[in-house]
Length: 306
View 1 (spheres, rainbow, N blue to C red):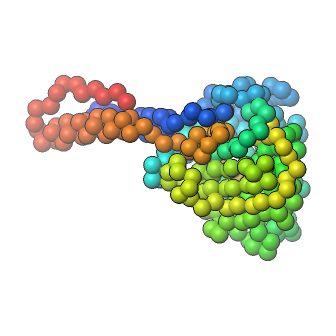
View 2 (tube, rainbow, N blue to C red):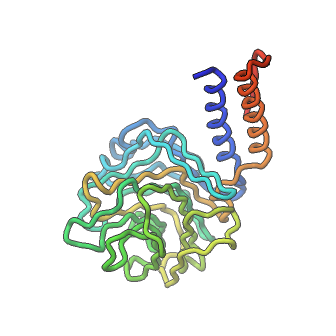
View 3 (cartoon, rainbow, N blue to C red):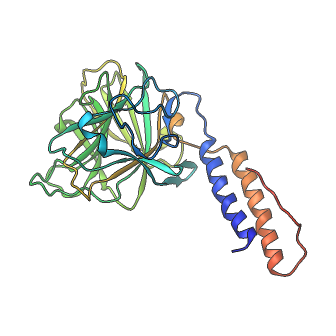
């Protein structure tokens, strides 16, 4: 591979990072891209999780008996659609199968005490689809939501099986009852990376779940919606909960976790100027490479910074 080829590949990767990182974050409350953590268990011992990300009021708290299930792993994923660029780095949070024969609170983190409309977004991958092998054909799930303490979240979304359906779907929920859930219409694809946006509003009696937005215009998208009296008045814990994750099958990856006050805060949109500058730089290097192939005289060095 020529030096120019290497530079082109590196420049393209760099441009994506620039595009993904240059978003409007005026109302961003907290974020975590999991890049600053060492590989291995997120919380090796009680209270030992390092502080990562920005804006959080605490570190991650993992259920003591389940620490081995929550890992920082070398894994890269991204979501690019329309004007949205959500790009993971070289690491991600991995939730592994475990001894969760019933609904289990797995982990939580506090962004502080919130009282208004709250948005949460994340990149989500289910590398292998949820399997029902324990005799219960409707209770494998991954749930993520918020509440005022580390408990079964009263406003939430997630991935689960509708009753009698062997395939998993995204859902929106208020209260802690599975019967108070609304499911999406498309089964979760294990080969796809999703950008999931949750909205908790209406005095926390309404949950909206947006799957794979293509812009930061909330009104242009149709969410999965559930309403109902949740009983919660403040949100201070972001909570992950699981059930019946079979060994070797039900693994999840999560990255680019954001908490904000508007849809646009948590849906990454690159600055047009950053994209334009990178495209110009890539075009210049591409022309230099083409000229070199044709035996034309090329500059001794071409440098582009994005």
